Amino acid sequence: MKIPPKRIFFASLLAPLLACLNLSAFEFSEHSVSPSGQFVIYGADTPYRGAISALAERIKANLLSVLKRRDAWKIAIVVNLQPRAVNLPELPPAELWFSRTETGVKLQLDLTVSQPISPAAIERELAGMIVLEMIYRNQTGITSGEVFVDPPNWLVDGLLASTPNRDRASLVTGLSVPQRPPSLNEFLQQRPESLDSAARQLYRSYSFVLVQTLIESSDGPKGLGRYIDNLASASNDPMGGLETAFPEVRDFERAWKSKIAQLKAAPDKGLFTFSATKARLNELLSAKLPPLDAREKSASLEDFSRTKASPARRLALQKFSHELLLLRTRANPVLRGVIGDYQQITDELALGKNHRVATRLAELSSLRSALSDRMSDIDDYMNWFEAVKLETPSGVFDNYLKASSEMRAPKRKDPLSVYLDAMEMEF
Image (cartoon, rainbow, N blue to C red):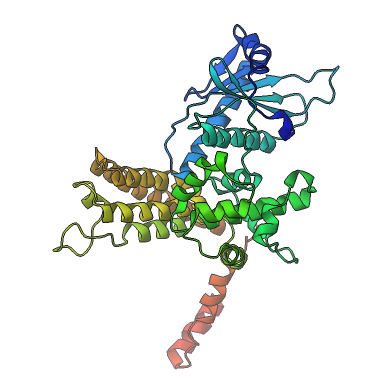
């Protein structure tokens, strides 16, 4: 829950009081600092603070993965886990403070841990704080009394839905509701806090569509990151802001409707199986990259690890990394980490860093082979278990058995065959 916009501001007079009430009071109290140092968690007990720290770091890592950015935070985020006050039943489950004090800009999120706030709501609040820090980390000209820009709801929802390890089947299924989808401008004007639960779920689905549309544009995650960086000075026209940040998208409305139709028509709306993920990864790794010189027809990642990338090669590597990112969003969990490692190596090669790349690629190749062998062993065991251990058939092999019986050759009518058939029936 966000506090009203009129309460969200930088105030030189109020800041010392906020610093005293919200920060100084915790100087000598127990707190935890996340591994990256960005999140400082006060209140509750050590396990709860550790869980919030791990969740915040995981959310940030996932968002950085989608945006293809490094962790370059500048504003620390204080998370205050406070118990519910008996004399203040109206205390909101989550409240944001963003102020400028004598020591600089401060971000604080107050979470009322005893209230029935869902893990998804906590995740969304933390994601909103992380995106807000991205917006203002480079804004040095902030003055007192200036109202700050809250991250668009669709942006936070869409980024969360686009992160790895997400089951997006329910989001895509929500697009199949029998009603006319809103125009992009209508969607951008919606206020999700005023929607009921069903409409809120549909809003998340459309948020995912919009973020995927932007990620799959020619500028991809780089353009989305640039859009976030410029939100502090964006106009009140959300459609105009998108058109300015993504000039390569000539018709946003058509791209929006096309993406909705594409996701609706997707035959498989869940995660890929291991075999499908493996096949797609092999296809990507065997794809042709620009040759290193005129004598070669194509190049592999191993070839790129032995030389510095030219501008054309960097562009090819960036496109290849984008393809890996799209595969990772729907990959089987067994191979998702492997795909992430390939994506990291590709990004480093695009930046001209090739230290130990050949060794890491060889290790990944061995790991893929070992995983493939292990999954094959698991399939063999499950087939054996199906054949000899289950009391009732699962139906998995019904199609195979049917096809096998239909392909059986007709019985022969010669004397020897008739005699053998008779003997088989006898014994």
